[in-house]
Length: 392
Image (tube, rainbow, N blue to C red; front, side, top):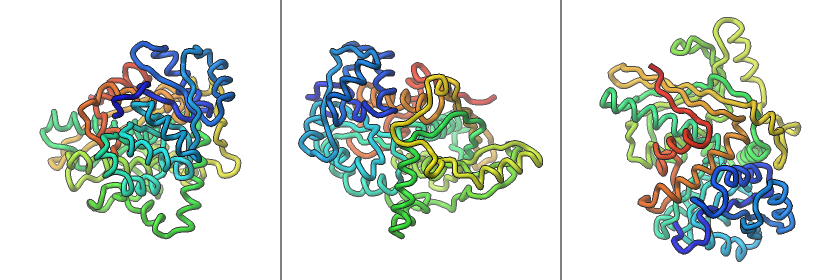
C-alpha cells in the first residue's frame, strides 16, 4: 500500500457505466472527506466533470486525467492512490500498464477481471515486483468471483469450527439469478475466446482448473459442461457460465492460503434448473444457449436501467462434504442484479477493505478470499446487500 498517497481509493474508468455506479455508491455510502478519501479518474476531464455533475457528486471530489496509452499519466494517478479501483476492461487490452504501475509503485489494485489467461500472465510477470514493493493486487473483485470465492471460504470456516476438518468436496450451485452480465464482461469473454483461438497455449490455460495456482496440480475436477441430475440438490443442473473463472480463482485461494481446504480439494459450479422432465429440458436449453449474447449482447458502457438493477438478485447454494462424510450447506445471496448493481457495491467495499482493514497484509497478487477473507464478508453484509448464511 502506498503510504504517501493523497486518496484512499481512485476510481479509474469513472465515466463508464460500471465506474459511474461505483462513484455513485462511494458518494452515497461514504460521502466526501469522511471515512474514505476518493477521487475519480478517466481519459477525459470534460466527461469526468459531466459524470460528476450528473451523479450529484460534490465538486470537492477530485478529477484525475489518466490513460492506459500514456504511462506518465498512469504513473501520476497510481502515486496519488493507496488503491486504484479499475473498471476499464477488457483488461487484456487495457489493464497491463496499470498493473505494472501499481506493482512498481507499491499501490494496491482491485479490478473486475474474469480474464483467466491475462491474470495468469500478470501473476507470472508482476507478482515478485508486487511482493517487493508492498502492492496488493487483487483480481476478480466483482460478481466474478467474490460471492463464490468468499462463499467457499465461509463454508470452510464453519466446517473447521463444527467438524475440525475442511470439506474436501464442495458443490456450488446457482439457484436463482435475475439480471444481466455487464457489457464489459461480455467484451472480455469475447476477447478471451478470440485470443484462445489464436494461441493454443492460452487455450491450455483456460482448460486447466489449476492454471492460477503457481504450479500446484490437484486431483481431477468435474468439468461441469454437461447436463446431469444432482441428487444432493434434487434438481437437474446445467453449465454455469461463470464457473470457468470462479473455479480457478477458488483453487488459487486455496493455494495462496497454504491449502486450508486440503491438497485433494474438489470443487465445481453449476446452475440448478429444477427436478423432473421440465428441469431436464431447462438444463438442456441452458447448455445450448450463449448467455453472453454474441454480437447482440450488451456493449461496454451499456447497461440496464436503475429499476432493472434494483429488481435483480442472485441466490447461490453450497454443499460441503468432509472426508468423514459430514455435510454442511451454506447460501450466499445478493440484492441487486449481478453484473452492475451488486458488482459496483462489491468492488467498492473490496477496495476499502484492502486499504482500511488489511494493513498487515504483505505485497503480492491475491484472490479476494486470500487477501480480505471473512473481514470482507462482514463489510459486504453491512453495506453491500449480500448475505452469507449456514443452512441449518
